[in-house]
Image (cartoon, rainbow, N blue to C red; front, side):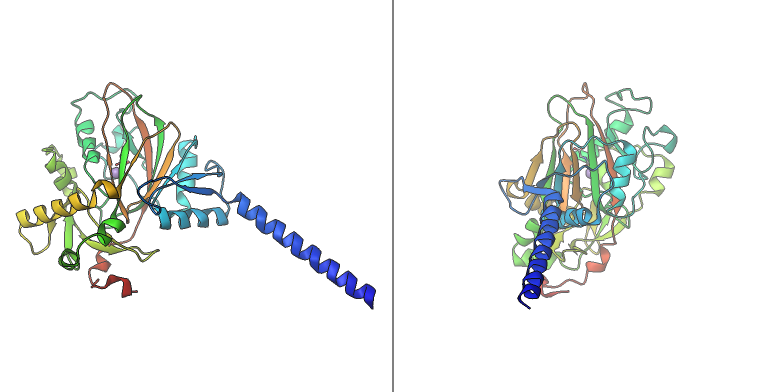
Length: 331
Ligand code: OGA
Ligand code: MN
């Protein structure tokens, strides 16, 4: 009888040890998420210990979703990816948008439609002239924006890979729109709730005085509706939803709309809410457009900058226009 008890105990101990080993191994295999922003513990992290060129385990994908929910911007150093690997990795996060918002005609494109061309290169790989309308159009990226907010279904995540970067400059800034919402005074929050904005690339480019659009482009620039305040479908966090593409608040006059949107943008992009990312070659950055804005910082057009972006389609924001204070109580 004693022998039986001893055997059972030994078997149990072995089982527990083996299970612990497996658990430990899994934890060790998960990507390492390291906060990167001295100004916030919940905005921008670096991710190491995962190769995005390889197919990912579902546990790894879950860990990345979780990190995105917390940090909204993830920087992955040293991820040399082919376009196909970039696209395969992106599909773990949802359906891809096609680059229909580009200024370029489809035949003039350097990259396939799944990739947004964030470069100063033309189809043949040569550098664009400074006055090339395609380049001037792309200067719109230097205004604070959320990707594809000019589409009825705007972007959820953007995944940008740095292939060639200038020797200096060319950084990208990000702003935490959850923190921006939380820091608004209650009167302004009340004024924002329920408002519907209209977004179009006509507004963002118009701000730069860029108005050269072909007829087919103008048709694609009919303004779409977005909520000014939105709830994140995964985290349920509330964010201000601003973008350079926003030009109108429904039911408001144009000047009143514009000045209010400008004030909110000034508030949301104060230093305390922003992070400036300095790129290295083969960095890949994912950001959540539902909780952030970003802008390009600009660089000398004598230099080549080749960045490629996939975009994960999101959900309509307009379903959040019923939000009322206190927003924390809402489902
Ligand atoms: C983008 C974008 C900023 C940059 O890829 O959507 O706005 O710095 N990029 O190129
Ligand atoms: Mn962008």
